[in-house]
Image (cartoon, rainbow, N blue to C red):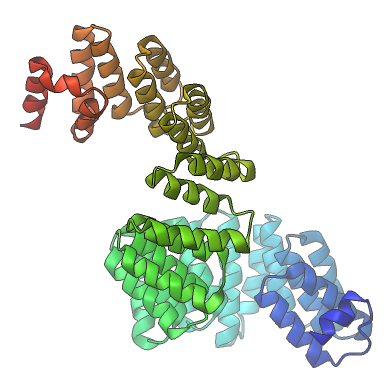
Length: 451
C-alpha cells in the first residue's frame, strides 16, 4: 500500500487518526503485532494526547507478552482517561499473567457494577484469563459459556470457549452449548466450527464433518474451516471429500504449497501416484524448502519402484529436516531395495534413534536384520528397543528370531505373551518368516487364541 511504502522509507507524514485506527485494526486482525506496534508509535507521536492509541499500544504489548511495558502504558492512558473501562480490562488481564489474581479479580468486581451487556462480555472474557492462569479450566469454561450466551458474535469469546473446552475436556458440554447458540444464530460460522471440533473429540466424525463444512459455507473466507474439515475427512478415510475441500481451499487461498502437498497426499491414499507426483512437483516449484513434499515424492517413486529417484528425494527431505524418523525409514527401505545393505543399516539406525518411542521403526529394523540372517544382531536391537518402548510387534519379532535360532521353547513362550497382548498382529510372523506356517505347534497355539 501507499502507507507501507512510505512507512518503509520512514516518511509517513501526517495521517488522519481514522487511517491509523483502520491500519491498526488490520494488523491486529492479522496477528502482526510487531508491525502494529511500529504504526501505533507513529500515531502516538502525532496524537500525543489521544488515550485511544496508548490503550491500543498497551493491548499490543500484552499480546506480545510484554506485560511490564503494557502496565506502564496503561498508567499513561489512565491519566488521560481515568474512567475508561478498557484500561481496567487490560490491566486485569496483565495482572492475571503476573499471577496477581486477587488484584485482577478486584478490578473486575469493581467493573461489574453498572456494566452494560457488552461490558459484561468483556469482563467475563477477562475473568476467563484469570482462571486460565490459575489453571482452573472448569471456571474458565463457565465464564466463557456465560459470555457466548450473552453475545455469540464476540469473536474472542467464541475462540476462547473452544480453547477452554479442550483444556477442561468438557467436549459434550461444548456440543450442547453450541447447539443452543446455533438454534438462536444459525449463521454463526464460529459456532459451527466449535461444534465440529466438539463432535471430533467425542468421535462423531460424520457430524463433525457436516458442522465444519457449514463453517466455511457460511464464511467462504474462513480457511481453518476448510483445513480442519478436510483433516477430519482423512481421519475416516474419506479421501475423495478431503481432496475436494483441499482443492477448493487452494483455488480460494492459493496457490499454497502446503495445500498442494495435502492434495498430493490424498491422491497417494487413492493410489493415483502419477497425479500425486504432479502436485508435489508444483509444490516444490512454489517452495523448494518443503521437506514433506520431497518425502512424499520419495514415497511416490518408491511405489513406482524407481528407487534411485526415491533415494534422491528422501535425501533432499532429510537435508531440509533431519528430525523426522519416517524420512530415514523411507531412505532405508529404498537402499534395501537396491541391495545397499550398509546404507540401509545406517538409515534404519537413524530412524530408531530419531523416533525411539515408536515400535514401528524398531520392528522394521529387526525385520531387515532377520531377513539378512543376522539373528544375534536382531536380538541386540530388540534388547536396545526395550529401553525405549514396548509393543506386541516387538514380542512377535523376538519370538520369530528365537524360532529361527532354534530356541523353540523360548519362541512359544514369547508367542503366547504376544498373542495375549495383541492377537490381531499375529500375521506379522508369517510375513517375516513364511516357513512358520508349516509349524504345527505355532499353528495350534494361534488357533487356540483365535477361539
